[in-house]
Image (cartoon, rainbow, N blue to C red; front, side, top):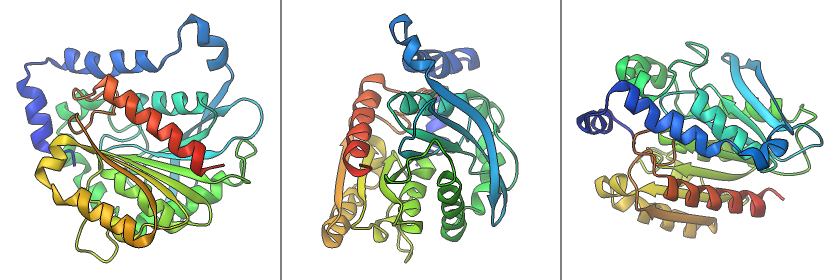
Amino acid sequence: MCDETDLARWAKSGLSRRQFSAMGVAAGIAACTPGDEARGQQSGLSESEVSFATEDGTMDAFFVHPASGAAPAVILWPDIAGLREAKMAMARRLADAGYAVLAVNPYYRDTPAPQFSDFADFSAKQGFQVVGPWREKLDHAAITRDAAAIVAWLDTQDAVDTAKGIGSQGYCMTGSFAIRTVAARPDRVKAAASFHGGGLVTEEPTSPHKLLKESAHYLIAVAQNDDAKAPGDKDALRQAAADAGVQAEIEVYPADHGWCVLDAPSYAEAEANRAWDRLLALYSGALA
């Protein structure tokens, strides 16, 4: 999972804050922004900032979906740096593919989004120290409560096709959240995708690899440097999936932690696009 060593490694690359930001937000978001030939399709989206009640307070989120008709819902859990423009751009890209996407603020108990404008801002503001107390509140029970509230809200939206399953995807610390979301509402959430997710295999009884549901499909994309730190995790995940009779695609990608995130200096466009294609294939098969 993303930690101080990742940011230290990025800093040693000699990037200034402006270069750091440009590598991620400017280049990455541009990659997700349609050109002239696609602007008509992009204009077919509707987006808004929303909020709704949970057991623990009021969650804020970004909701984007096709402007007409109803679409399968997807929950997008952001990484450690929280809900920000990079994640909104990714949500728009997914909505443009035909999904009603809710990008949520996992830190809503403490502060509304955005907490950081990008990963450069996260680094400059000593983000790990800032979010530490917020993250401590995000245990299995809290995520389960949040997931239930999110699904309940989505199912009240006209833009959501409630006849189809819901997808859930997470990055870095929230890769585990995506899997826990299925466990919270297996009747509605039919697919989970974890990208360079942390904490997927632990000794706890609520470890994500022990929560896999036969009713859902899974995509677990592992960073090569995360695999080097914990090479047994992928095997434990594969064995857990086999034992549970679960459909799961588990692969180590030739890219480093954060490679799917637009404003991370480790963003690797080719491998990020390959992971994105696998995400679309997951949802196409599982949410129908």
